[in-house]
Amino acid sequence: MEDARTLVIDGVRLTLVEDFRELGRVLKAQENRGRWDILAVDQFMTAEISSFGGYIVLALYAEVNTDRLPEAIKEDPEVEAEFSDGKLTLKYYATYEYTGGATLIAIVNRINRFRSLLGRVLAELQHR
Image (cartoon, rainbow, N blue to C red; front, top):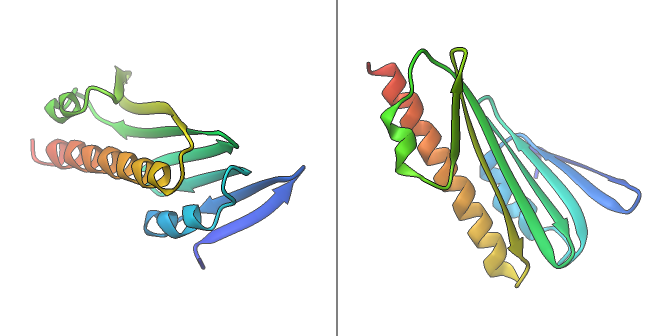
């Protein structure tokens, strides 16, 4: 996990991931039902995954400079889209009950859907 940095503060394991391709491996390495927080970032978006033992909170965020609202944002009604002052902000927030590895897979799948939507938004804005 060369693209992940970890430290522990007050018993909480904090990990920074700068390559979303590493996220699955980083998630698998976390303590089951433990207290940990992962911040995954790249040039396009930020994902925060926080475990509180019995549940995990997922927050996704992206900003795109644009002069219009792309049609692609309508493809995922679970993603909140705000357009203001030439900036499109995409947000997603959810809480997952921790039930084992299936929960982590669901989180990675949700992040991938968000990234896919963001990719379609960026592609649409480039091809006006």
